[in-house]
Length: 296
Ligand code: GLU
Image 1 (cartoon, rainbow, N blue to C red):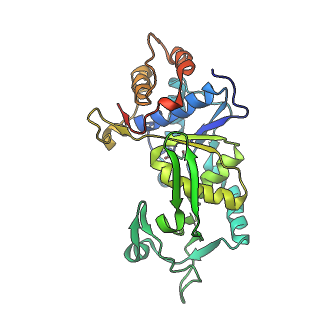
Image 2: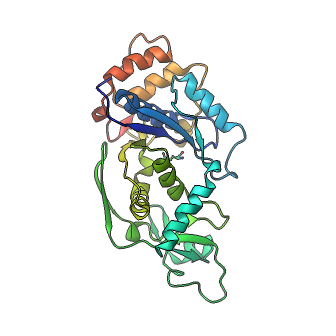
Image 3: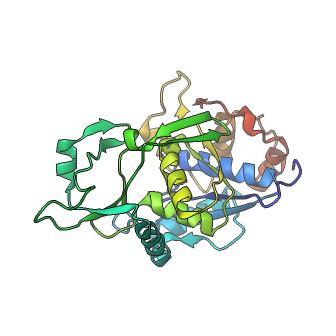
């Protein structure tokens, strides 16, 4: 351990939509290693907001698998399904500052009318100044402003995004009544006192939205590190099939070595078990070694 970082609290936040796969293990190991190497606390949050996408028993299996990989958490896992009241309160707070508006558009309407941005259609603002006549509210959106959000990522470097231009007014509560990931993640990271977020680079473009919400809700901004998407030995993006292949809880070490190598860390030798692996690994963890693109 390289000295304590006072109050370091990290987390891993899987969605229980299937077995733990290699891509998730990669993120779990990086966030765990960074937390432990700083003498910090590591938490697990089950992001089960969308009950329709949840696979029965998946959360329990994920937790069992994490334990098999020696990834042990410090506080009882938080389940987002238990947090609806907190999300509603945050939404009410935003609403009281006139930062939200009801939107009556269907997905198909938005898709038909919008420019396509990095994450799909950029909402054209149809309902921003009031619901068109005869329209019923469906979702709730955040009113974005022209300002740029800047932050420093510990792996990806300086980042800047104009949320209004790149993403548009985004959904905070969906038409089916489910609070959106962007809102829930901000509310929960603050509630759990998370200080350091280490997660996959697929979420890099979500971070400015989360920072906007933190600012609007008066919540602290955690430090961010987005680990790279994995590339195969030829430098091609790892196929979905490989990244989403379940890891084998009965034989954790091969996947651990592979993920560790993908994270650019010094190889671990002669570790006969996950705890022995971590004992060596944590002494050598350097986030600076993580490449912007990972090959495995
Ligand atoms: N639940 C998200 C996922 O599984 C991760 C959320 C996060 O780390 O912020 O992709």
